[in-house]
Image 1: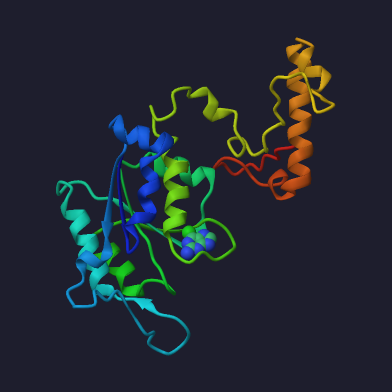
Image 2: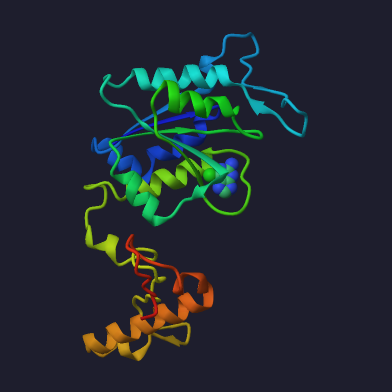
Length: 246
Ligand code: 6GU
């Protein structure tokens, strides 16, 4: 998968050299390219923002550097392929495991990191109508970050680990929180007694049926306590509502 990221703080994305994603880049599974938006300005001050029409607090990112940067990214691919453009922002659709799976199937993603109050709306229209890109505005949750960079780190990590080959043991991907609508069960390792606390007896029993039943109960209890909203969420894409608790 190819991933382009445009930002005024390219150093923020240095973390993509590390850990699993860094390894996947070394292995040639992910081709990540980070671009400095200011390389597409032409004034002495390398200006990327200006005051909002209609008034209001904060600054708005100017359309011209964005149009040029996106044109530069698109021009790097062959004419038949285009990236899906992901713009992180608190006003976007929620980023979920389902969306991560969807994005992991794309051959090419481009991320536009906004700062300040956001990017001039005409950039989105330009990307869709003139460049022919599918544009998705994506939010990590109901709180405000200062810019899209931290969100891109999260999204690329969540998506990158779903790209075939990035995680050696594909089985570890299925037994995870949010893969089937319930949170994960509690886990333990050696020693059997630590700090006066014992590992739950059932896990030492060797009774795989009992262990599976205990883990399922734990998942339900934990989901009810921490994320009751998940217990009544509909799953899948059909018209039948399946309740996770059943
Ligand atoms: Cl994706 N971006 C910004 N700037 N703030 C956020 C967010 C994203 N998700 C939640 N808050």
